[in-house]
Image 1 (spheres, helix red, strand yellow):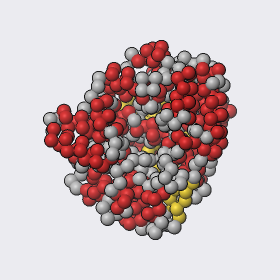
Image 2 (cartoon, helix red, strand yellow):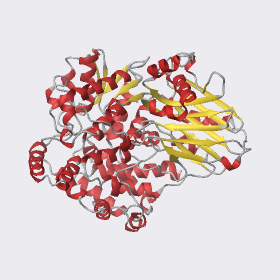
Image 3 (cartoon, helix red, strand yellow):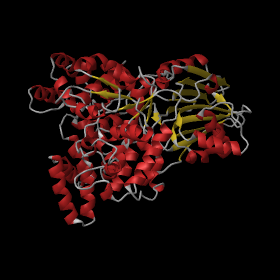
Length: 617
């Protein structure tokens, strides 16, 4: 796990090492253990290392092939590197290190881009062919590891985060207003290649690229991007039983335990992270496992202590942290800078604090990210399921599931989602934009006509299975981005066992009733964890995740001043994005307890702080 950066000058002008060094320093938190640089002609590659496998200097990057034709910089982990190494040894290759980086480079030499399909891991890498004067780069299937770039007629600049790229620009960056629009309207980011900066885009998940950089062949200096992994085309036969699912899950865990540094688990108390902990204890005898949690106090929003404490009899290395309104105020500016783009909810802040705790004990963490997308973990997934049952004419099943849903959840969100998903794309967009009415009308109308994958594909899924796949395409990546920023800011590698592609590809082909059944989601996981998970966790139906008592925090005296100063500031009130008076009114209603609007307040406060930090400055 590391940070990569690079500059390619198309006219062959030598890359100034000082520019590359600056990029590397900006992401030094991603790799505090080592760093390296390669500059040759018009290309410069920078690398900062967080040592996970083979901690010796043999893992230094940029790494060269034996004949020094190829140079690689690589961020991520290839979990099946031992198996690939064995296969390559049989083909006559030799290795000087025990790193997955050397295996990755050798696999490219042997199989070229076809080797991507052999990889089980998370990755973003660049390989420079010094003979052909070309670059090949790729990103993992689901977007666990990031890859951003700026492409102009003069150069190609890339990095693991956006900020290093901004440092190379000669003009002040500008906001991508359509990304801001979708952030405000749908609470979504990262559904396309766009970022919040017009000057920076990202390589989409499951994509790779080729780029010729020979200054003597300017006509070939074109970046060719292709999709190497299409989830819809990779769906495999479903699991025949819950035990078969459990075996695949344990195999994923086994691979992700490969490390030469300590490993821990981010334990929220929910079904997903608890399944990881219980499986590690019962099937891998990891009684010395470190766990890290955020707690707030009994009966406070976001607190799951009663579920976390169920593991106290099995584990001795359990650590917790208590995020507060004081810590959030103290961390707010740092949190905005660490993420580099607006975050639409306060949940990632709780994860940020958990990572700040974990850094003192481990270098690698495991958590349950991706399980909700595989197994319909969000309550609104009931809306897709009900829609699917209606479209298939399964009225009796629909009636039964509606009844069981209402009984189990004592909520109408699933039904409201069902009705919402039945609307046309235009009506869905209008409903979301007018929900709170604080988006500037002219601003909304100026962007509403632009196509949106959220309003059409994401919300328009006709079946539960289609909805799950669309979540991988259009929603999962922003969660993975936030996890990457939170973990890497504290020099931690975060691994996600539920996103092993072998597990995902067979889970998404399951019949819908094995995902949602009798008013409960994640049906096959609950079956698979029987006699492994504590029953109160296995059978719980509420979904909390990393939440916080922000509704109450935002009513405290300190936050009243903090938020009040922001929403009355001339910079905020003059932006043609939000009706400042309506935002002020919404906050007033929140303070008067006429409703809990903490999520909306967080959204426009974080957005404004981002504007001030990255666009106005």
